[in-house]
Length: 230
Image 1 (cartoon, rainbow, N blue to C red):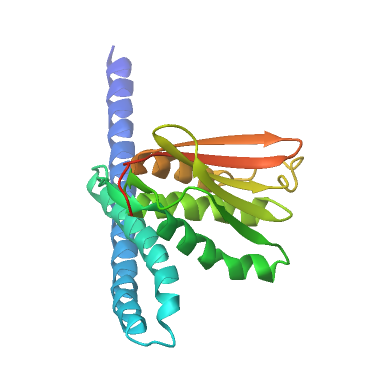
Image 2 (spheres, rainbow, N blue to C red):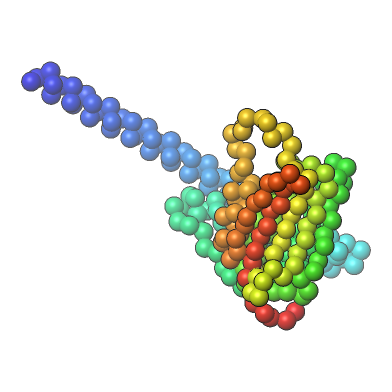
């Protein structure tokens, strides 16, 4: 009996010790998340003012919209960091968004990386001056991750097409010639961009689907139209 009680007590102390270690590690992770959010917030603020200065310079004003889209994406990344630290989900905001502005700025921001890799990035716009009901930051996050995924894992030219896909929706398609290295074993972290894009698409008010076929890979993002004129 005494031996059993001693073992039970020892087991209880072991569980308590493990709980303390886990709590310390969690606190350390949260501190690191807080530090990361702090360090990103400062440069993001500086970039906002830098973009405002670019807009006032006629020779550089055309670059401002490209950076704006990346700042929108950075803002939601910061919101996610703060949410992870507090344990609360980041809140999405839905508003009428002029879709062409968001898509063109996202594509323009990725033209240089694709050109450096010797690949074409084309945009075919057939949706007209369409507004969608979306969170602009989450929409930029979804598009940015889709283009990054095509740049990193796809091959050949990339075509972005935007068109009305139904009475109440508009579709954005990102198409490439297919993945590279499909036979490799999945590495840790692979697929993270698509998971983020899918989550961001839902937060933006839409839905993301992925089709990998013999003709290539097509990522399609469907968004609700508002019917509002530009």
